[in-house]
Structure formats: C-alpha cells, structure tokens
Length: 380
Image (tube, rainbow, N blue to C red; front, side, top):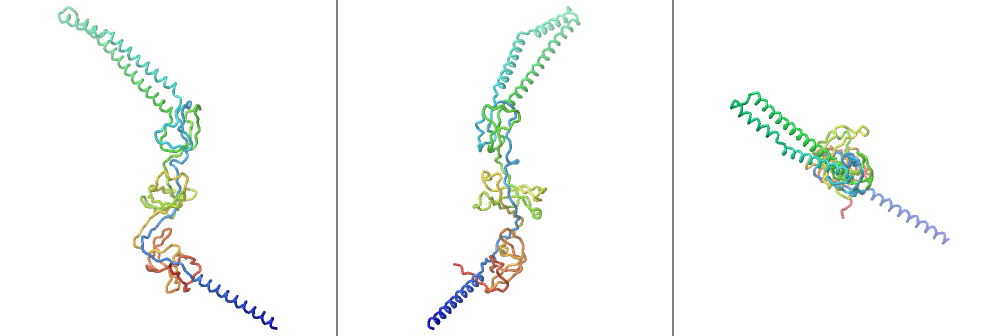
C-alpha cells in the first residue's frame, strides 16, 4: 500500500512539473509575441524616386570587329593579344608595304628627273630671245623706212607664237606637278592604310590574324571592346513621365555589392519604349572611374524626381494596406491611417496621421492587432 501511494505521489509531481513547464512556455511565448520592434517618426528630406534597372555596355554595341582597310600580308601584329589595352592612335597591325614604298620612290624619281630635264631644255633654248632681238631690229629698220610694216607685223606674230608655246608648256608642267602631288597623296594615304590604327581607346578580345597571314580588304584582324561606357537605366511607363534631364540619381552596381550607391545624373532620355518590354531607356552619367564600369554588368537605380526638406518620415516597411501603420502608445498598438506624400525605396513622407517622435512598428506587422498590449525592448 505504501508503494502504491508513492507511485501516486510521483505521478502527481510529474504532472505538476509538466503544468509548470507548459505554463512557463506559454508565458514566454506570450511575452515573445508581445515584444515589438519600432522606429521613430523623424524629420528629413522627403524624396520621390523612380526605380529602374541598370545595364552597362561598351559604346556602339559592345564587342566590335577591328578591320583592315586594305589587303596584304601581315608584317607585324604584336600589339594584338587578348585583353591588351590600346589607346586611340596606336598602331595595332602593319601590312607589308614594300611594293608600295618602291612605287612611291620610283614615282618621285621619275618626276624629279622630268623637272630637271625641263630646266636644262629651258636653259638651252634661246629661241624666244633670238625672236625678240629680231623683232627689235625690224622695228628699228621700220622706223628708218628700210623695212615694211607687214614684215615687222609678221615678226611680232612669230614672237607671240613662241610666247604662247612657252605658256602652254608652263601650263602642262603645272598640270604635271598637280598630277604628281595628287598621285603622291593617294599613294601616301594607301601607305598609311597599310597600318591598322586604333580609332578609340579599347581592349582586345579575340585576335584573328598572325604574322605572315594574307588578308583581304576589309578583313577583321581582331575584335575589341571600346573603353567608353554607356550606363542605361530601364524604367517603367508609369514612371517615365516624371524624368527630366539633369535629375540626380543613385546607382547600385551588382559588380560592387559592398559599396555605397554611386551618384549619377540623367544625361539623355530616349522617347521610344522597347517594343517587347514597354520600358523606356534613360542614360545617366555615373560618378565612378570609367575603368570600373564592366561591360555587360547590371544593377539598380533610383532617380530623384522630387524633393521636400523638413518632412515627416516613416520607414516604408512600417506601412501595411498601402497607407496604414501601427503606432505604439501607452504600451498598446494603434492603427493609424496616413496621408502620404513622396516615397522612395526606404522611406515615406507623412502629410498627416502621425507626429514627430512617435514610434511605429517595423517588424512582424502581421502579428499585431489594434489595441494589443505590447512591450518595447529596452535599448542596451
């Protein structure tokens, strides 16, 4: 009998312990549920911001071919290696110009020889001087009455003919000089085009030629990416109408997740939407070293389209049902309906509904109800 009573007492103790533990768990759960995380209503700059996505691309469509204007055999292309950087004006490829240089030298020698030959002929040719002396003598004879006027007239025509002949020869020589200069200019242009020169700063991607390779006119020798970057923001149709040139923006690049957003300014607005996505493109200038803008990278942007100073602000995560918040007052939560103004990604302007310094619930909002008693943890 004593053993039986002992068993009963043991069962009662265990049951009592279970009740105590359960009660403690309920109390602890209740206290945990009633604990609320709040944030104060503050004053600051209210910002209306348009969100969008960012795409970074190299100028003129990204990867492009680098072409040789003329054909020939590649003599030198050591500047072309994958990922090599080059500047505008750098020579990247040279074609064998031996034949062209020989043609230029030969053309120059021939012209100089003809000019020297002409000088010698003019120096040796006294025809015009003799004709002028004869005319002068005939005019003296005419003055004395020893020669007829017709003879003098014929002599003068002969001098004029010689002068005309020399003028024609001078014209032909001037034309020969002009033709020579034009020909030399053409050949020198061809000589320059035997070298592929960078027209902008860039980076080599793929090399398509090698020393000794025979290429045709217009053949690509490499592909490259321009160093110039375009940062394009894609915004929705409902937000596009508020965007203006010169508006400030913040850009967050996925390539640099640990860094603060970069300042930016709207520099160009395209008025036609993408046919597929119906989103509009806005170009921005970002305050960042261009070398850090990676072709093909992406990110997010917020464009400031409106701003008011000294405005009441609440965290956007405190909002529910669009314009309601829970305000904690005297240990209980109160539902307040707000009149909202500007909103950005993190904060909302309050035009009416709360006062500066009041506390609003910012976490687990769905766990509370109007009038519920809550406990705000004491700051440590």
